[in-house]
Length: 77
Image (cartoon, rainbow, N blue to C red):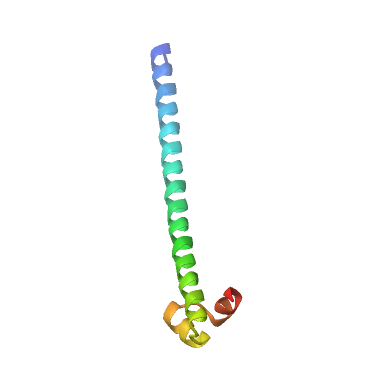
């Protein structure tokens, strides 16, 4: 293999490595974004449950409406 072919192979390997790194980073960002959205949704539900508690709703009703367990609701109080 001559120098030109070796250089081309090396360049190709570097580009492949960079493309993999970019794809990996994009996957990490996508995962973090989904995780952040889920945490935000959960926090919103907890805030709603807490407001319901303050308005006098019983824990069972809050659980049915929000999907939180009764234990999760008790921890909010």
